[in-house]
Amino acid sequence: MLFDFGSIKKHGMIVTFLFVWTCLHVVGVTYGTHNLPLHQSYIGDEQAPVNGALHILQDKSLLAVHNLKTLYYGPVFAVFALPAVVSDFTVRFVTGEVSGADDYKNFILWNWGGIVLGIRITATLVSLMTLIFVYKILSLESINEKKDMLLAFFGTTIVGLNFYFFEYSHFFKHWVFVIFFLVAQIYFALRLREVDGKRSIYWILHGICFVLSFGINYLSAIYAIAFLPLLYLLWIKKDKVARKYIYLYVGGVSFTSLLILLWHPYAFLRYLGFLNIGDVTSGGVGNTYNPVTSVDNSWGYYLTEIFFNNLPLVIGVLILLYLLYKRGVIKKQLYWLWMFISIALINMLVFCPSTHHEGRYMLPTIMMLLLLTGVALVKFINNIKNHELVIFRLVSLLLILYIGFHVVHIGKWIEIYAQGPVEKEILKEIFERQEKNEDLSTNPVLLIQSYIAGNVHTKEAYEFYIEKRGREDMNLYKAIMSAPLPDNIDLLNARYVFDQDLPQGYLEISEYEMVYQYLTPRSKELNLFDYFDENLLRLWYWKSFSPRYVRIK
Image (cartoon, rainbow, N blue to C red):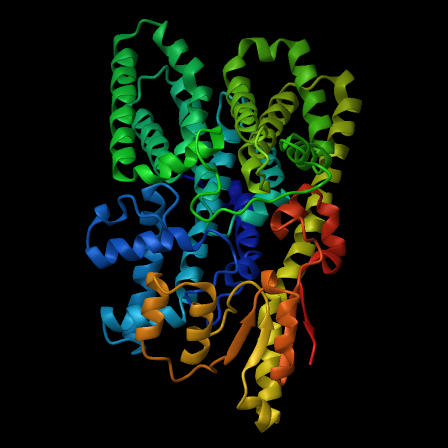
């Protein structure tokens, strides 16, 4: 059975680890979800699939996302957001917060935090399934000949306690799903190798994972290179059953992938930008830049992310691979080595030449490095020799240091995100000042920043922002201006001076009793995630790098 863990006694350690690991994600899952209006999203890209899900429900058709410009991912990503939207509506309806679908449309304009909470729970569960598949891979007879579950457990902890995997495993980003389907495909490919391609269930499940991954991120098709040698090995056996399944598999995934492209071609055209055929920034993607590691490509940024933050792991896996090579193990089982290395390298070759860089783009590469380490460690220890004990202790020390380094930084990350968005702190201060001073409560607050704050505003404030920003034709703001305001939320009466209007905008300060300015110390690095991802040690100086508000008056 696919998920037959057997007795708790046998697999108690991994079950306990997965439970604790899941609980540690509470901070990330709940981050910035309280009273969150639809015009704000504290974690980038989470809103795009929800937009698609809302269109599907509104039109009662999966075809509603066809060429939807606000969905810049594959259409299947919107489908995965549906359970969160439906469950949020159900809870609101049962508790009497909304009376029906039309009322719910207005409700989420002022608070879509329940949906965000739902999609993040979905992402966390998918990441949990990823770790289960890692454990299953390291338990396979072709990998773990002695079926040593302690080794499988240790290899899984290396993956689960990696900072990058943990950091992104609860946010509803498409890479979470791509990683899951990629690891699942590797598991089913290894199973196909064990049964010589004669079990239809593994072909079907592998094909489903490929198609769903492609339907979320069209670029995931490049990882199919990892499984070509397996198809070749099964083909040359000249087994009629295996060849029949190969025909059906290739034909099935090709036809289904074509249907997905026709379902939402806009996302495909956008993804061509990563290959310098189109525009990578279309669809609202910003361009991050670091003056140290980016000149006309991102090789420096990604190599720093991979090697600086994972150096003990890299050294350890190179030692293990060298020893396995000397034993002749690698020569006999090149297929698993090819799967991991080919995915890691092709991922780098696609993203490194571009000046646009985001830390999560290297998740497939880092994941393959982690899996390769786990497999190499299991194979090495399964047949360890007495004269290799010293090397074993050295590799163990490197891996323990590596895990410790990442665990400490996971702890620091949790501490930072437990404080919530900095914007929420300043909004609380504004409302407290207005409550204590009647003069302040009757006058709008001036915020010097480039975006609208994540709180429900007064209609006058929205009207000012829409006119200032030229958002009159946006459907979101049309809906905001026509919908009734909620009764149970403090309304923010704010006016805005945008960064590009400075210094002329300072002339407006004298007209307001309360003024706050949003400052970003790192003017050339727009994304805090990517800045920390390049060098994890920066987490310890996060206050120096993080945006903050300054009270001017």
